[in-house]
Image (cartoon, rainbow, N blue to C red; front, side, top):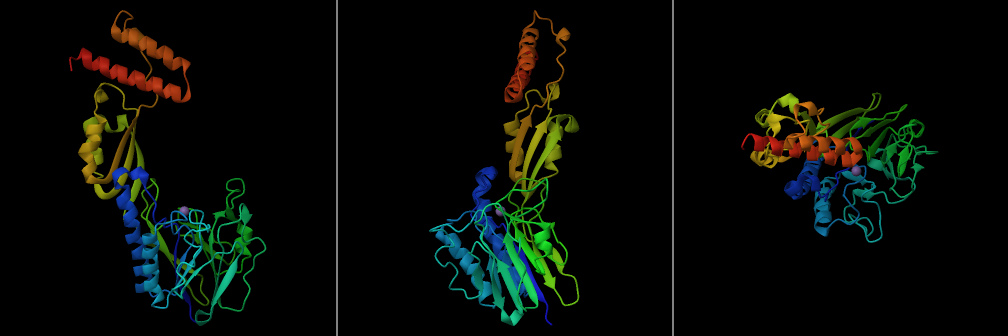
Length: 375
Ligand SMILES: [Mn+2]
């Protein structure tokens, strides 16, 4: 009995704006198309039987026609080789009147199937002795696999769903859900999941169930490179599921303590070592207090380093103010007066107002210290 080879992707989010990347957002949006093209290349060179896209192929239900055309072109490359593509709409590109999936999109490609029903339906692929199941995101708060069991005499049964995995006490509500029980009793050999943007193994019982995560990173975080999953089902062996990196850019958010790097020059050389034109880096500098940091020109520092990165954002978060040693600053001095006023303000505020007062203290101290040093 021949095995089955599946390339699993999800959450491509073609057309996403990437506003948090500032002027590079547009470039990253263009770049997603190149990443999707690499996914198709991989499906062709690895001679898979099918590509499955578990939702959010597009960032919304109304992508520009040129973008739909690009996807049609890419899927056409698979179609002409007889490689199937199965798509479920996701939460971002759900079926809407007049939306991308409403006008028989991709219907010119005989090996592309989009699951548009709110209930699970299936497609039988005789030559592969396989049945593929899926449904669109339409019904709210619904355990999609409750009461489902894959019927039919085919050798391989594959599911494609865009849903959250129900974890009691942690994840109990979302637009679509799958439960451990539902997966375990589904009768599926492989369940391709989308919606969660982190790769993960949620296999239950005899069913291998995985989130692939996006092929290109979408949010600032730990800097994981986007990937797809290569899935191999073979007679008499457990499913083999292997991640393959296809993404290019790393999106990293990190925090650096002022004391950790000492002073602005120390911060510069710390960041200089991370320079990488495929790295988008957002750095929050915490607790940069004291003489070392007074007068630090954050904008100039960012401008100096930015050309060495795909994108760089430096944000100084003052954090908790150091204890004010009021005795060291007599009330008769300008500094002493200022610090007493600031201390009163800080003591009487909370939340965002407190942050504002602390920022005012920091800026005020900077200005006064610079004046006293004649800068
Ligand atoms: Mn998504």
